[in-house]
Length: 182
Figure 1 (cartoon, helix red, strand yellow):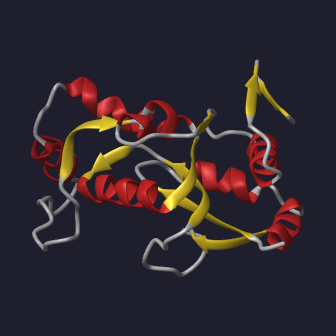
Figure 2 (tube, rainbow, N blue to C red):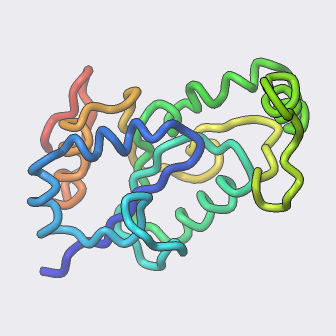
């Protein structure tokens, strides 16, 4: 049997979901026999590949780079899973939505100038800070999401359950506070 092509992506978030993924510990060794990790912040691949079977997306859509990336992911991925509360609800990154600012420049001004302890100033080099969107969004507000794994971060056993279900061809189910095998 061919190994499934799997990716993990980190958009606007804290990397806690990837830390939870790494908490799979020895299960990662078992997964390595069943999957080919083709894109992830855990490996050195620069371009999101074609024909990905399963992608776990962490983080909210906060900036133009995130927006471009999530569209590319959806176009090149069969099964897309929002994992973690930032991907599912926009969670902490969406706090800036409450500021009512429709201009990312105001947020950058607050962070880089008003909040600076020394030598405050906006980054001037192109490409250092991607253009912020007017509003932070959960992944499903931008593209179709097949499955959701909530949690901040989601427990490793929930990630394992969803991955095992998808890898075995079963429909993932979330019941109550725990994912159940199919």
